[in-house]
Length: 411
Image 1 (tube, rainbow, N blue to C red):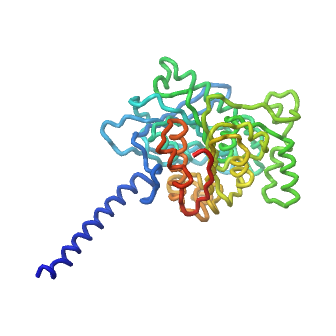
Image 2 (image 1 turned 180 degrees about the vertical axis):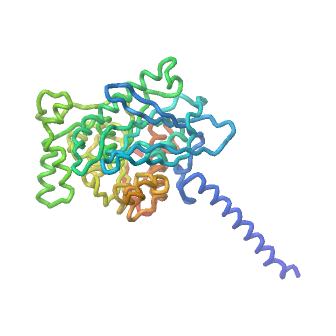
Image 3 (image 1 turned 135 degrees about the horizontal axis):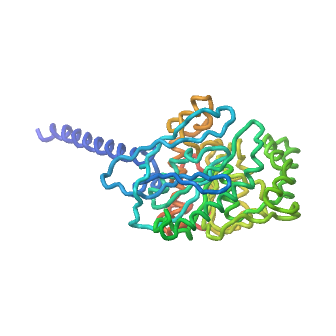
């Protein structure tokens, strides 16, 4: 009789185990985008608040700030961020991005001051497009500040060359604003550590991160790169004309009396400790201009990117920066907008037929975002908070994800 009952008990035991596993999977799905989210893609311990501010200047610079927040009732946070549309084709459109933060929540100062992360959006892309990334970093004890670079998209990309000059100036203005507001009675008093700073960004935001770290224009090298691209019938050579045809205007906008014969001046701040350019435009700097960077760098990009080609951005960044600590994270066969909010979070893109702006032809966006969050969070914890466990997760033997080609130095 005992033997006949054993299978029944075994069956019940297996059912219980399956229920436990299912419950755990559900719990994990609430903290990562997918149940199989890697360690640092799981949301951090801090509740997250979000608030708006603005830098008063001739042309005001609007900001969103994400930060560790108090949540005494442990309520589930939900928010709709306005999305600024900078496209002449849809000037009257209204869009929102859904997120998981509490608007204007009180600061959690228990572990303050927190390192500062400046997040620079892609060209003509609203800052709230990257709310998923900013919220996640804030949940790990960072204050994230994203400026709304004032530029608009038109078919001719006529403001692209101006943005190359204005964006680095925006970052310096942000740092000056933080310096003012960390003082007594400032909004960042006791909240922000203004001496521990990273800059991250996507696309032209990645370019902006590179300039903030000290990369300098090398127009001679850029011209040579463009000549070689033209001879090879490189489809991405269109990027060259946008800038080389306006080079004198760029120098004037930068306040230079003449075109530099060698490297252009830097727009950097010595307090910046690390950068993460995501599909960042690196072609303006050449090998010598990128070699000016010596702080830790994590370059992330898609190998089939047609917006900022991998060989024009992510690869040369990793190859040519002088940093002793650097990493390259390659999403195999991924396109340019893999870093964007999903179509579910920002449905306006799909509604106007721009589905490719919030999706990827190959990658599941939730999986991609989990990996982006994992790598970037671990890197920033390691470099800004000296987190040895996070650093160990970036060692070559610790990284094994299908579809990711990884190369690292210094971990």
